Image 1 (cartoon, rainbow, N blue to C red):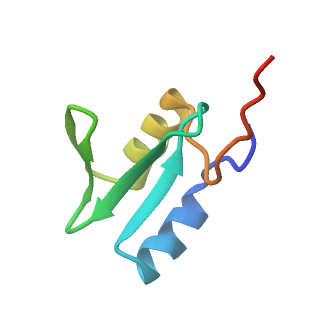
Image 2 (cartoon, rainbow, N blue to C red; image 1 turned 120 degrees about the horizontal axis):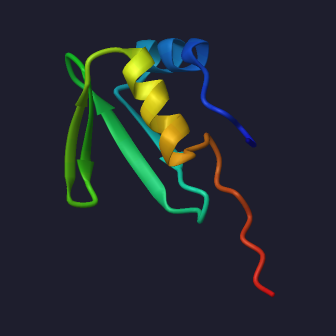
Length: 74
């Protein structure tokens, strides 16, 4: 996967920032915020992740990546 999300990246990013935007395969942005845990609001969902492992598993299952993927229309 292009720009696959790694634990080291998340740890460093959330050390400096309070939120992160990842992108679905169709280019749709998904924003996560950090409070005392990582939380997703939106898209008719309210999810709380207990640790980076649980968050990474969600990212992999949903095929989220760090940068938008160009969409080719044929």
